[in-house]
Length: 119
Image 1: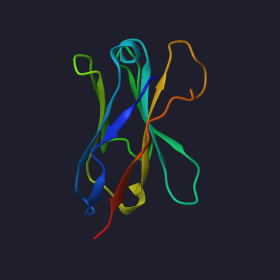
Image 2: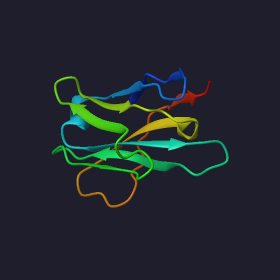
Image 3: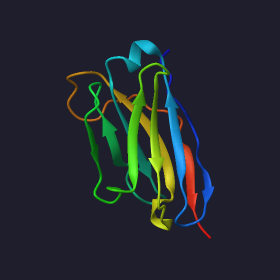
Image 4: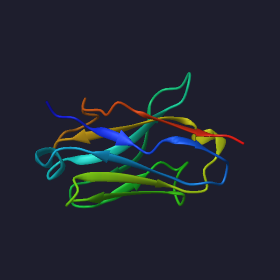
């Protein structure tokens, strides 16, 4: 069974930083596009950042310039470096993996990790 295992969430003050990690198996990581989504209470899940198997990235406007997505092909891990965090970044963050050529969202998710930005 394929798993995505997330870590790195927590409580941070506004302006602070966190780095989220998502590890998976080599068979998945090598070819799949990876992404981070988030869901705040009472809101729909939204795309935060994505990275293709080739390393191309895209970001939500709300995090552009503050968050960076990257992937380590040796560690089979994708990261989300979050800087200059704001209270509105508070949410459960989910890792997602999508096979090559798939259109839309693919139903392969991590368990989620809570990020809380508060003073």
